[in-house]
Image 1 (cartoon, helix red, strand yellow):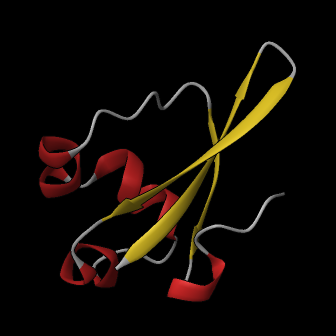
Image 2 (cartoon, helix red, strand yellow; image 1 turned 120 degrees about the vertical axis):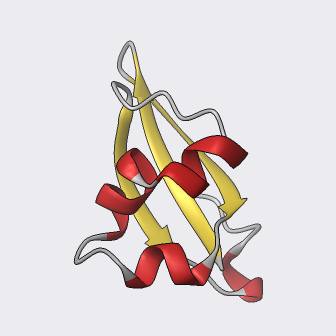
Length: 67
């Protein structure tokens, strides 16, 4: 599944769209917890969990949207 991650860095916000296994997300009540804690996700991606402030599922139409 595609997920938009929102990071804050010294007062600036930026987002990244990544792919994570849907099965990983199904094991968590909150998507952000999955991104921060799931071993499968953490093996695939480097996530700066200290700067991560939000995670949202996105569709193909949302990928290029500016916030």
